[in-house]
Length: 380
Image (cartoon, one colour):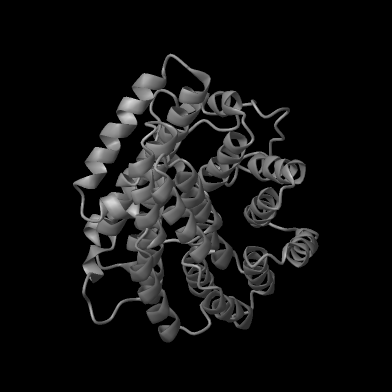
């Protein structure tokens, strides 16, 4: 596999990969139990010096695509690692030289699209990625990220076509895995499982690709009602590096399994300065366990949500997280239902449909519950 492609793939495949550059080279770790701490965010001086040097180089040459893309990747990796979207704004700032430009380098387009995807601007991301593959038809990470964006929107046929673009670009493993993800979402679980297991047998598979495949196994196994198989895949994935998406997915699995104490134990390193993603899960698990810190987590999460609402598009782009907070922490089912509906305008993954179903079931007025349940059946 081309080294540069793999490095860019780790960056561009969010949310499927969302790898932190500081965790991708970590020594593999197998947790002994669900409560073993698997991640502590690094804050060493070496990292800060490298980031400062990168910013200074970009300031001297703001129109250098390689420097701008590297800076944007660094900022977005930070946003992913900390679960905090504010660093994504810095990533956009690193690429602002090409804002509105008629000619934009392909790598800049792909990176801008990846940041837009992180911020849930899926239509903007899709437009930039389509432009990127027009400029460079055999650009595998552009096709793969486009397939992911289309999948999030529930457009599986379009996503399949983009997966085929990955195959035509010479990346067979990632193209086949891309198609298998769509199979699993269509309910073709046995075929998808067989494909993922076959791909996991590939010799000398990079750890980041292993993690992506294992995560792709874990999620549909949980949806299919196979929690033991899902847990085994999650533990293997987390052992390869607790990236933001992988760790968040595992924490949500534990919450679904009724194990909030395990969630609190895993998030212990983040309690002092949690990112948004960690804070949401702390607030949920804290309420479920009656942890004395839960009130503080709830207050802080509410303040962050309020701050996000004053930013352009903030209320819509994070509707999923806001709906979960309203339902699982505040016990405001009406507000949660409105947010779940808003969220479905942007993304239609199984977790989003599941959120609509949960908010529908929580409605106290029979008429509203019946209407919401009908909406859920329509979306399905």
